[in-house]
Image (tube, rainbow, N blue to C red; front, side):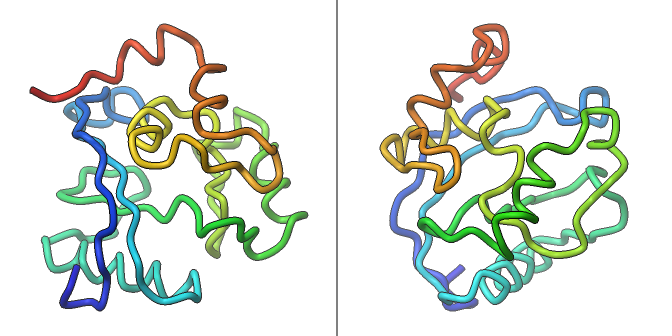
Length: 157
């Protein structure tokens, strides 16, 4: 990360989680990190993708097998590219979520509030961060999740 001009500020514990989408491969190890880098979200994502590439990641298929997957979940209280786009992707009907993908970065990540494998590690480092459109903290979003989904996020020993 340092080679790409990124500085790690905080890192969560590591968690074993079922792969997503279900059946797409082996279980994952998930974590969240707070990272300093470019202020421009697109430039930050480009640097994260460069780190992935250094670890052999090839972006061939959406949700395909990968050696490393670094997602940009949020950038402080930035809504990118705009509120209407973020809300459109956040409210995308479930049947379209596996097939439709935005062609540009959307922040905060449109599914962040729905995913235990994201929120549990994020709670480790940013429990008080508040979603700029939902006005819920990470702790509140985590608490609202299905207990079955939460139980699938297991701290790695």
